[in-house]
Length: 461
Ligand code: ADP
Image (cartoon, rainbow, N blue to C red; front, side, top):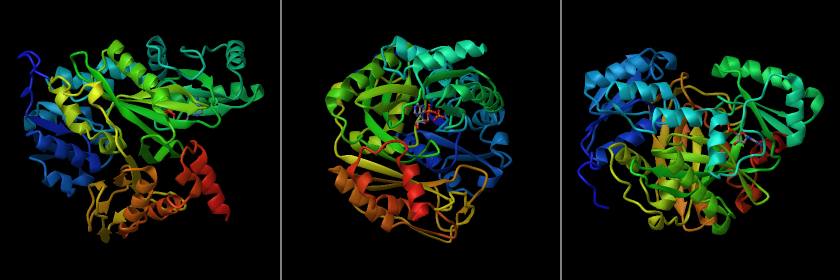
């Protein structure tokens, strides 16, 4: 598509500060370099020796090991951007990626925040206002009001009765699988409200709660979107992230098995419409629960997701490059008709943790072998001799495969996992190998509780 001079803001920045660490810092550097952009890496004291620093054009240590004093230190990051002459900040995922105040501060400091506007982040960051915006845009939501719960116990009880038990109480500002409580009967409702309110106040700085129907056997299915600043938006197919432990995703795949185009098409188009309606810019993910043939919106993530590679493999779109290009002001060079998803892709999150207790495992990687072969991709920041620090998330690598069919992709993942060796620390690789031998998983369409039940059975055996 041709761009007018106004639209073509290419060159608005030529240096990107990556406000993150680990595998995603490496992934964003690749995208920047391929687009001809310079990179500035930042680190905490614990990451001084991290290899992603030596591959960047500049590498600045911005604070002590604790994330609160480094990767979450907005002033230090903005100062680093100024010192290094960066014109843009890519927040990656986690840390400050969904912090509306940070996006605003970056823009006020004259930097491009590679993400949506701070007001989009704020709207979607509050799960109640997100639900309201989605209902208004015609996106199907989980039954329950799009308003915060009042204080009055009688009114709360009436709302629960109207929805019908079981219900789930959620913190409006919640995230990371925290701040949620399932209630199956009326006599424990008030206590559950009090506990969740207190948790929400402490963890998210706001006691605001809402209530919705608790779906008992849903799958977690999400839709990837990308939008530019010129009124164009497309969706890039769907992913299934139902393999979760404690609400945390462990294995993701694209497309979601057994979802026929007729049923997903209107949902994808509703997401695109919602983006246009709220003036969304950049990449985003609409998360849905799917049960008995119906989709229910739960939240939107206004950033790049950990699992974006499975969509890159099936759609052929480099999502990180596309994200940076729209932040530069380019018109999206993709129409919905151009989007075709082919084959099947899986991603395994390789974590530095005990495969049985799931406790984090820090230490030095004494030996590392990574798999090679057709359709295999590894996104990682580690190498033999790398010291896994106890300070941050335990994700050390993402193993991604792509093959023509789901069964072939599963076989390829088994092969990739067999070729992955990490010594010196514990990892969840043995657990992932066992999971990819499981018959029900191989059949597909397992729900969000499947993994926990599978682990329970495994422990009992
Ligand atoms: P977070 O922002 O903390 O990740 P989400 O709203 O995305 O919270 O929910 C995380 C997970 O919690 C979902 O993937 C699902 O497993 C479960 N969950 C959330 N809402 C419901 C619901 N209404 N019914 C059943 N499970 C739910």
